[in-house]
Length: 157
Image (cartoon, rainbow, N blue to C red; front, side):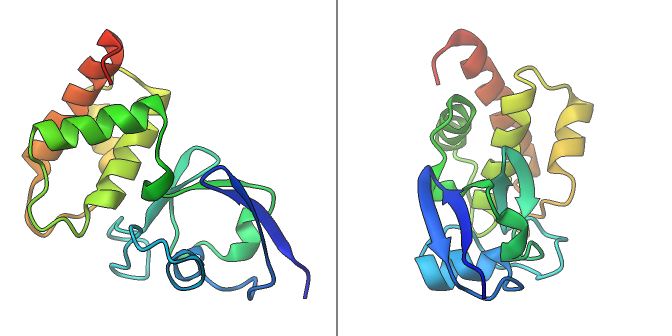
């Protein structure tokens, strides 16, 4: 078996784990990063969202072999300007209710804001499509994305 090498939250990783293992299970079970959640296992809920080379990606269906030479960022490593602004807005607006889906929500929102610091409603809808929240905090999530965009523009992330 060939070693799989990639970057995880800014640190080099080399593993001989099964290349077909979903990235989600590697992160949770092998590395101990439990902020990325299991929700559905079929990429429909967004709880497992991580950044793969800056793109919001569902880790439950991403095999380890797909991250060779890639940069993977989890909620634990989210330290970009967009990530900090997003997390600050989530706290300011008290978005979280039960919290289970929120790491995936934050990762999707931060990926959006990293590419588009002034998203429209349609941009937000497109970026957040497929991120489900059983507590229905969608209005607070949308408000937090707008707040994070404002914070980024003001440089107060």
